[in-house]
Figure 1 (cartoon, protein in one colour):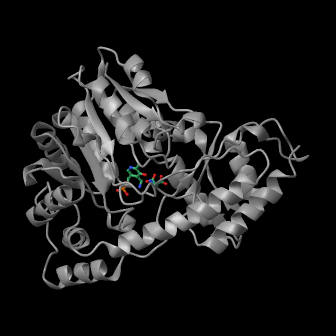
Figure 2 (tube, rainbow, N blue to C red; figure 1 turned 180 degrees about the horizontal axis):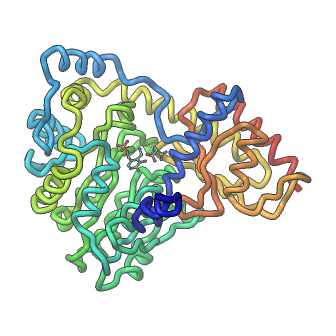
Length: 406
Ligand code: PMP
Ligand code: GLU
Protein backbone atom coordinates (compact mmCIF):
# COMPACT_ATOMS: atom_id res chain seq x y z
CA UNK A 1 0.00 0.00 0.00
CA UNK A 2 1.57 3.35 -0.91
CA UNK A 3 1.31 6.28 1.45
CA UNK A 4 -1.34 7.94 -0.72
CA UNK A 5 -3.67 4.99 -0.40
CA UNK A 6 -3.07 4.94 3.35
CA UNK A 7 -3.90 8.65 3.48
CA UNK A 8 -7.11 8.12 1.56
CA UNK A 9 -8.35 5.73 4.21
CA UNK A 10 -8.01 8.46 6.81
CA UNK A 11 -11.21 10.22 5.97
CA UNK A 12 -12.98 12.12 8.71
CA UNK A 13 -16.68 12.86 8.45
CA UNK A 14 -17.86 16.27 7.26
CA UNK A 15 -19.61 16.44 10.61
CA UNK A 16 -16.38 16.59 12.59
CA UNK A 17 -14.49 18.62 10.00
CA UNK A 18 -17.16 21.31 10.08
CA UNK A 19 -17.33 21.39 13.84
CA UNK A 20 -15.49 24.17 15.68
CA UNK A 21 -13.30 23.20 18.61
CA UNK A 22 -14.46 24.40 22.05
CA UNK A 23 -12.74 27.79 22.39
CA UNK A 24 -12.88 27.67 26.18
CA UNK A 25 -11.26 24.26 26.44
CA UNK A 26 -8.70 25.15 23.75
CA UNK A 27 -7.57 28.29 25.56
CA UNK A 28 -7.45 26.49 28.91
CA UNK A 29 -5.25 23.80 27.34
CA UNK A 30 -2.94 26.38 25.79
CA UNK A 31 -2.58 28.08 29.19
CA UNK A 32 -1.75 24.70 30.79
CA UNK A 33 0.88 23.98 28.14
CA UNK A 34 2.57 27.36 28.57
CA UNK A 35 2.50 26.89 32.35
CA UNK A 36 4.13 23.46 31.93
CA UNK A 37 6.88 25.16 29.89
CA UNK A 38 7.61 27.36 32.91
CA UNK A 39 5.68 30.54 31.98
CA UNK A 40 3.79 32.18 34.84
CA UNK A 41 0.40 32.33 33.16
CA UNK A 42 -2.66 33.66 34.95
CA UNK A 43 -5.55 31.80 33.41
CA UNK A 44 -8.88 33.58 33.30
CA UNK A 45 -9.97 31.28 30.50
CA UNK A 46 -11.90 28.39 31.99
CA UNK A 47 -15.35 28.59 33.49
CA UNK A 48 -14.51 26.45 36.48
CA UNK A 49 -14.76 27.38 40.16
CA UNK A 50 -11.31 27.41 41.75
CA UNK A 51 -12.80 26.07 45.01
CA UNK A 52 -12.53 22.40 45.87
CA UNK A 53 -15.72 20.35 46.12
CA UNK A 54 -17.06 20.72 49.70
CA UNK A 55 -15.77 18.03 52.07
CA UNK A 56 -19.13 16.47 52.94
CA UNK A 57 -19.78 15.78 49.23
CA UNK A 58 -16.38 14.13 48.77
CA UNK A 59 -17.03 11.99 51.87
CA UNK A 60 -20.37 10.88 50.43
CA UNK A 61 -18.58 9.72 47.26
CA UNK A 62 -16.00 7.76 49.27
CA UNK A 63 -18.79 6.13 51.25
CA UNK A 64 -20.63 5.27 48.03
CA UNK A 65 -17.52 3.49 46.76
CA UNK A 66 -17.17 1.61 50.03
CA UNK A 67 -20.86 0.68 49.85
CA UNK A 68 -20.32 -0.85 46.41
CA UNK A 69 -21.78 1.84 44.15
CA UNK A 70 -19.47 0.75 41.37
CA UNK A 71 -21.96 -0.51 38.78
CA UNK A 72 -24.11 0.93 36.00
CA UNK A 73 -27.07 2.95 37.19
CA UNK A 74 -30.37 3.29 35.33
CA UNK A 75 -29.77 5.43 32.22
CA UNK A 76 -31.90 8.29 33.62
CA UNK A 77 -29.98 8.24 36.91
CA UNK A 78 -30.43 6.69 40.36
CA UNK A 79 -34.02 7.06 41.49
CA UNK A 80 -32.74 8.47 44.78
CA UNK A 81 -30.94 11.27 42.93
CA UNK A 82 -33.90 12.03 40.65
CA UNK A 83 -36.10 12.28 43.73
CA UNK A 84 -33.57 14.59 45.40
CA UNK A 85 -33.63 16.76 42.27
CA UNK A 86 -37.45 16.93 42.49
CA UNK A 87 -37.08 18.00 46.14
CA UNK A 88 -34.60 20.67 45.06
CA UNK A 89 -37.04 22.01 42.44
CA UNK A 90 -39.85 22.24 44.99
CA UNK A 91 -37.60 23.80 47.63
CA UNK A 92 -35.69 26.31 45.46
CA UNK A 93 -38.00 27.01 42.54
CA UNK A 94 -41.50 26.03 43.72
CA UNK A 95 -41.69 23.74 40.70
CA UNK A 96 -43.22 20.27 40.78
CA UNK A 97 -41.73 17.46 38.70
CA UNK A 98 -41.99 13.70 38.99
CA UNK A 99 -38.80 11.61 39.05
CA UNK A 100 -39.59 10.29 35.56
CA UNK A 101 -39.27 13.83 34.20
CA UNK A 102 -35.68 14.11 35.42
CA UNK A 103 -32.75 12.81 33.35
CA UNK A 104 -29.25 12.82 34.85
CA UNK A 105 -26.37 13.04 32.36
CA UNK A 106 -22.59 13.30 32.18
CA UNK A 107 -22.61 17.06 32.66
CA UNK A 108 -25.04 19.73 31.52
CA UNK A 109 -23.16 19.66 28.23
CA UNK A 110 -24.51 16.19 27.54
CA UNK A 111 -28.01 17.33 28.55
CA UNK A 112 -27.86 19.97 25.80
CA UNK A 113 -26.54 17.43 23.31
CA UNK A 114 -29.32 14.96 24.21
CA UNK A 115 -31.92 17.69 23.76
CA UNK A 116 -30.60 18.98 20.44
CA UNK A 117 -30.20 15.49 19.02
CA UNK A 118 -33.68 14.53 20.17
CA UNK A 119 -35.57 17.67 19.12
CA UNK A 120 -33.78 19.08 16.07
CA UNK A 121 -33.19 17.93 12.52
CA UNK A 122 -32.30 19.28 9.05
CA UNK A 123 -34.43 22.25 8.10
CA UNK A 124 -35.11 23.30 11.71
CA UNK A 125 -33.99 26.53 13.31
CA UNK A 126 -32.99 27.03 16.93
CA UNK A 127 -33.00 30.54 18.37
CA UNK A 128 -29.96 31.18 20.52
CA UNK A 129 -29.96 34.26 22.74
CA UNK A 130 -26.59 35.83 22.15
CA UNK A 131 -23.93 36.28 23.51
CA UNK A 132 -24.23 32.55 24.11
CA UNK A 133 -22.22 29.74 25.63
CA UNK A 134 -19.78 28.34 23.04
CA UNK A 135 -21.11 24.82 22.77
CA UNK A 136 -24.74 25.72 21.93
CA UNK A 137 -23.85 26.64 18.35
CA UNK A 138 -21.78 23.56 17.58
CA UNK A 139 -24.21 21.14 19.21
CA UNK A 140 -27.17 22.62 17.33
CA UNK A 141 -25.28 22.45 14.03
CA UNK A 142 -24.30 18.85 14.75
CA UNK A 143 -27.99 18.01 15.00
CA UNK A 144 -28.48 19.37 11.45
CA UNK A 145 -30.39 22.48 12.49
CA UNK A 146 -29.45 26.12 11.94
CA UNK A 147 -28.76 28.36 14.95
CA UNK A 148 -30.40 31.78 14.69
CA UNK A 149 -28.70 34.30 16.94
CA UNK A 150 -30.66 37.03 18.64
CA UNK A 151 -28.19 39.42 20.17
CA UNK A 152 -28.42 41.71 23.17
CA UNK A 153 -25.91 44.57 23.02
CA UNK A 154 -23.80 45.70 25.96
CA UNK A 155 -26.13 48.75 26.23
CA UNK A 156 -29.03 46.37 26.92
CA UNK A 157 -26.89 44.46 29.40
CA UNK A 158 -26.43 41.78 26.72
CA UNK A 159 -30.06 40.65 27.12
CA UNK A 160 -32.09 40.10 23.98
CA UNK A 161 -35.63 41.45 24.25
CA UNK A 162 -38.95 39.72 23.68
CA UNK A 163 -39.47 41.90 20.59
CA UNK A 164 -36.18 40.68 19.12
CA UNK A 165 -37.15 37.08 19.86
CA UNK A 166 -40.52 37.62 18.22
CA UNK A 167 -38.98 38.85 14.99
CA UNK A 168 -36.61 35.87 14.77
CA UNK A 169 -39.36 33.22 14.94
CA UNK A 170 -40.23 31.43 11.70
CA UNK A 171 -42.33 28.38 10.88
CA UNK A 172 -39.10 26.34 11.18
CA UNK A 173 -38.20 27.41 14.73
CA UNK A 174 -38.24 24.38 17.04
CA UNK A 175 -36.11 25.49 19.98
CA UNK A 176 -34.97 28.54 21.90
CA UNK A 177 -31.96 28.26 24.19
CA UNK A 178 -30.38 30.69 26.63
CA UNK A 179 -28.61 30.77 29.98
CA UNK A 180 -29.52 32.95 32.94
CA UNK A 181 -27.32 33.75 34.83
CA UNK A 182 -25.51 33.90 31.51
CA UNK A 183 -22.20 32.48 30.38
CA UNK A 184 -20.37 34.57 29.02
CA UNK A 185 -21.96 37.88 30.11
CA UNK A 186 -22.98 37.25 33.73
CA UNK A 187 -26.34 38.90 32.98
CA UNK A 188 -29.45 37.72 34.79
CA UNK A 189 -32.88 38.06 33.17
CA UNK A 190 -35.51 39.68 35.40
CA UNK A 191 -38.96 38.21 36.00
CA UNK A 192 -40.48 40.84 33.69
CA UNK A 193 -38.01 40.12 30.89
CA UNK A 194 -38.63 36.38 31.10
CA UNK A 195 -42.39 36.89 31.28
CA UNK A 196 -42.25 39.04 28.11
CA UNK A 197 -40.34 36.28 26.29
CA UNK A 198 -42.78 33.64 27.57
CA UNK A 199 -45.69 35.80 26.34
CA UNK A 200 -44.19 35.77 22.84
CA UNK A 201 -43.45 32.04 22.85
CA UNK A 202 -46.87 30.98 24.07
CA UNK A 203 -48.25 31.62 20.60
CA UNK A 204 -45.70 29.25 19.00
CA UNK A 205 -46.36 25.81 20.49
CA UNK A 206 -43.81 24.08 18.21
CA UNK A 207 -40.93 25.79 20.09
CA UNK A 208 -39.31 24.05 23.07
CA UNK A 209 -37.63 26.46 25.47
CA UNK A 210 -34.31 25.27 26.88
CA UNK A 211 -33.44 27.26 29.97
CA UNK A 212 -29.86 26.66 31.07
CA UNK A 213 -29.75 27.47 34.78
CA UNK A 214 -26.40 25.96 35.68
CA UNK A 215 -25.34 29.23 37.39
CA UNK A 216 -28.53 29.38 39.48
CA UNK A 217 -26.70 29.64 42.80
CA UNK A 218 -24.16 32.21 41.59
CA UNK A 219 -26.46 35.19 41.59
CA UNK A 220 -25.71 38.60 43.14
CA UNK A 221 -29.02 40.32 42.38
CA UNK A 222 -30.28 39.84 45.93
CA UNK A 223 -33.45 38.37 44.37
CA UNK A 224 -34.30 34.66 44.26
CA UNK A 225 -33.40 32.84 41.06
CA UNK A 226 -36.15 32.98 38.44
CA UNK A 227 -36.81 30.23 35.94
CA UNK A 228 -38.94 30.76 32.85
CA UNK A 229 -40.64 27.46 33.85
CA UNK A 230 -42.27 29.37 36.71
CA UNK A 231 -44.81 30.78 34.24
CA UNK A 232 -47.52 28.12 34.36
CA UNK A 233 -48.86 28.90 30.90
CA UNK A 234 -45.55 27.84 29.32
CA UNK A 235 -44.13 25.28 31.79
CA UNK A 236 -45.11 22.27 29.68
CA UNK A 237 -42.80 23.54 26.91
CA UNK A 238 -39.77 24.37 29.06
CA UNK A 239 -36.78 22.15 29.72
CA UNK A 240 -34.60 23.28 32.61
CA UNK A 241 -30.93 22.33 32.33
CA UNK A 242 -28.92 22.41 35.52
CA UNK A 243 -25.95 20.64 37.04
CA UNK A 244 -23.41 20.33 39.80
CA UNK A 245 -20.31 21.80 38.12
CA UNK A 246 -20.74 25.42 39.13
CA UNK A 247 -22.90 25.72 42.25
CA UNK A 248 -21.16 22.84 44.05
CA UNK A 249 -17.69 23.16 42.42
CA UNK A 250 -18.01 19.67 40.93
CA UNK A 251 -16.79 20.14 37.35
CA UNK A 252 -14.76 16.93 37.35
CA UNK A 253 -17.63 14.79 38.64
CA UNK A 254 -19.47 15.20 35.31
CA UNK A 255 -23.06 15.51 36.43
CA UNK A 256 -25.88 17.54 34.96
CA UNK A 257 -29.63 17.06 34.71
CA UNK A 258 -32.78 18.18 32.97
CA UNK A 259 -36.35 18.58 34.15
CA UNK A 260 -38.52 18.19 31.09
CA UNK A 261 -41.95 17.37 29.74
CA UNK A 262 -42.29 13.57 29.84
CA UNK A 263 -42.04 13.04 26.07
CA UNK A 264 -38.75 14.94 25.95
CA UNK A 265 -37.32 13.20 29.04
CA UNK A 266 -38.15 9.82 27.44
CA UNK A 267 -36.39 10.82 24.21
CA UNK A 268 -33.28 11.95 26.08
CA UNK A 269 -33.12 8.65 27.98
CA UNK A 270 -33.31 6.79 24.68
CA UNK A 271 -30.57 8.97 23.18
CA UNK A 272 -28.31 8.67 26.21
CA UNK A 273 -28.89 4.92 26.33
CA UNK A 274 -27.02 4.65 23.03
CA UNK A 275 -24.25 7.14 23.78
CA UNK A 276 -23.08 6.94 27.38
CA UNK A 277 -25.61 5.06 29.56
CA UNK A 278 -26.02 6.55 33.02
CA UNK A 279 -23.61 8.96 34.71
CA UNK A 280 -20.98 7.72 37.21
CA UNK A 281 -22.67 5.86 40.08
CA UNK A 282 -20.65 7.27 42.99
CA UNK A 283 -20.88 10.83 41.58
CA UNK A 284 -24.64 10.42 41.64
CA UNK A 285 -24.65 9.24 45.26
CA UNK A 286 -22.52 12.24 46.26
CA UNK A 287 -24.88 14.53 44.35
CA UNK A 288 -27.78 13.41 46.54
CA UNK A 289 -25.80 14.70 49.53
CA UNK A 290 -24.90 17.90 47.67
CA UNK A 291 -28.56 18.72 47.03
CA UNK A 292 -30.08 17.70 50.34
CA UNK A 293 -27.39 18.86 52.80
CA UNK A 294 -27.05 22.42 54.04
CA UNK A 295 -26.24 24.71 51.08
CA UNK A 296 -24.04 27.05 53.13
CA UNK A 297 -20.81 25.99 51.35
CA UNK A 298 -22.38 26.91 47.99
CA UNK A 299 -23.55 30.28 49.29
CA UNK A 300 -20.09 30.96 50.76
CA UNK A 301 -18.56 30.42 47.31
CA UNK A 302 -21.11 32.82 45.84
CA UNK A 303 -20.24 35.43 48.49
CA UNK A 304 -16.60 35.18 47.47
CA UNK A 305 -17.49 35.43 43.76
CA UNK A 306 -19.53 38.52 44.60
CA UNK A 307 -16.54 40.20 46.29
CA UNK A 308 -14.32 39.30 43.36
CA UNK A 309 -16.90 40.66 40.91
CA UNK A 310 -16.87 44.01 42.72
CA UNK A 311 -13.09 44.18 42.69
CA UNK A 312 -12.59 42.89 39.17
CA UNK A 313 -15.22 45.08 37.52
CA UNK A 314 -13.82 48.16 39.27
CA UNK A 315 -10.23 47.40 38.18
CA UNK A 316 -11.17 46.47 34.61
CA UNK A 317 -13.28 49.62 34.20
CA UNK A 318 -10.18 51.66 34.99
CA UNK A 319 -8.34 50.29 31.92
CA UNK A 320 -8.60 52.89 29.16
CA UNK A 321 -10.76 51.68 26.26
CA UNK A 322 -12.42 48.83 28.17
CA UNK A 323 -16.21 49.10 28.16
CA UNK A 324 -17.45 47.00 31.08
CA UNK A 325 -20.97 46.23 32.24
CA UNK A 326 -21.78 45.03 35.74
CA UNK A 327 -22.58 41.31 35.63
CA UNK A 328 -25.04 40.17 38.30
CA UNK A 329 -24.36 36.43 38.20
CA UNK A 330 -22.02 33.61 37.14
CA UNK A 331 -18.29 34.42 37.33
CA UNK A 332 -17.46 36.15 34.06
CA UNK A 333 -16.87 39.70 32.89
CA UNK A 334 -17.35 40.36 29.19
CA UNK A 335 -15.88 43.77 28.28
CA UNK A 336 -16.09 45.36 24.86
CA UNK A 337 -12.44 45.84 23.89
CA UNK A 338 -12.94 46.88 20.27
CA UNK A 339 -11.25 50.21 21.06
CA UNK A 340 -7.96 48.35 20.62
CA UNK A 341 -8.75 46.85 17.21
CA UNK A 342 -6.52 48.37 14.55
CA UNK A 343 -3.83 49.31 17.09
CA UNK A 344 -0.31 47.83 17.30
CA UNK A 345 2.74 47.79 19.60
CA UNK A 346 5.30 47.70 16.79
CA UNK A 347 5.54 43.93 16.33
CA UNK A 348 1.91 42.91 17.04
CA UNK A 349 -1.08 44.27 15.14
CA UNK A 350 -4.44 43.73 16.84
CA UNK A 351 -7.19 43.22 14.29
CA UNK A 352 -9.76 41.46 16.43
CA UNK A 353 -10.51 39.71 19.74
CA UNK A 354 -8.50 36.62 18.77
CA UNK A 355 -5.42 38.78 18.13
CA UNK A 356 -5.91 40.58 21.42
CA UNK A 357 -6.19 37.29 23.32
CA UNK A 358 -3.03 35.96 21.65
CA UNK A 359 -1.21 39.19 22.41
CA UNK A 360 -2.28 39.14 26.05
CA UNK A 361 -1.35 35.48 26.37
CA UNK A 362 2.12 35.70 24.84
CA UNK A 363 3.03 39.23 25.94
CA UNK A 364 1.08 39.69 29.15
CA UNK A 365 0.89 36.02 30.20
CA UNK A 366 -2.84 36.26 30.90
CA UNK A 367 -5.24 33.80 29.25
CA UNK A 368 -8.73 35.00 28.26
CA UNK A 369 -11.21 33.77 25.67
CA UNK A 370 -12.13 35.71 22.53
CA UNK A 371 -15.73 36.90 22.37
CA UNK A 372 -15.94 35.54 18.83
CA UNK A 373 -16.75 32.07 20.14
CA UNK A 374 -19.65 33.51 22.13
CA UNK A 375 -21.14 35.52 19.26
CA UNK A 376 -19.61 38.87 20.27
CA UNK A 377 -16.37 39.56 18.37
CA UNK A 378 -16.12 43.00 20.01
CA UNK A 379 -15.66 41.42 23.46
CA UNK A 380 -13.39 39.12 25.44
CA UNK A 381 -14.40 36.86 28.31
CA UNK A 382 -12.56 36.88 31.62
CA UNK A 383 -13.44 34.27 34.22
CA UNK A 384 -12.82 35.47 37.78
CA UNK A 385 -12.54 32.04 39.33
CA UNK A 386 -9.21 33.00 40.88
CA UNK A 387 -8.21 34.60 44.17
CA UNK A 388 -8.23 38.39 44.54
CA UNK A 389 -4.43 38.73 44.44
CA UNK A 390 -4.27 36.88 41.11
CA UNK A 391 -7.09 39.05 39.78
CA UNK A 392 -5.22 42.23 40.72
CA UNK A 393 -2.06 40.91 39.09
CA UNK A 394 -4.00 39.88 35.95
CA UNK A 395 -5.48 43.34 35.55
CA UNK A 396 -2.07 44.93 36.07
CA UNK A 397 -0.62 42.73 33.30
CA UNK A 398 -3.53 43.39 30.93
CA UNK A 399 -3.33 47.11 31.56
CA UNK A 400 0.43 47.25 30.94
CA UNK A 401 0.09 45.22 27.74
CA UNK A 402 -2.79 47.18 26.19
CA UNK A 403 -1.25 50.53 27.04
CA UNK A 404 1.62 49.61 24.70
CA UNK A 405 -0.86 49.54 21.82
CA UNK A 406 -1.38 52.69 19.78
N1 PMP B 1 -24.06 25.44 30.30
C1 PMP B 1 -23.31 26.53 30.57
C2 PMP B 1 -23.93 27.88 30.42
C3 PMP B 1 -21.98 26.39 30.96
O1 PMP B 1 -21.24 27.46 31.22
C4 PMP B 1 -21.43 25.10 31.02
C5 PMP B 1 -19.96 24.96 31.29
N2 PMP B 1 -19.66 24.46 32.45
C6 PMP B 1 -22.25 24.00 30.79
C7 PMP B 1 -23.56 24.21 30.40
C8 PMP B 1 -21.76 22.58 30.87
O2 PMP B 1 -21.46 22.24 32.19
P1 PMP B 1 -21.09 20.76 32.63
O3 PMP B 1 -21.06 19.91 31.42
O4 PMP B 1 -19.77 20.86 33.33
O5 PMP B 1 -22.19 20.35 33.59
N1 GLU C 1 -18.42 25.94 30.54
C1 GLU C 1 -17.12 26.31 30.99
C2 GLU C 1 -16.65 27.51 30.20
O1 GLU C 1 -17.41 28.12 29.54
C3 GLU C 1 -16.18 25.14 30.97
C4 GLU C 1 -15.55 24.78 29.66
C5 GLU C 1 -16.52 24.18 28.71
O2 GLU C 1 -17.10 23.17 29.05
O3 GLU C 1 -16.68 24.78 27.65
O4 GLU C 1 -15.51 27.86 30.26
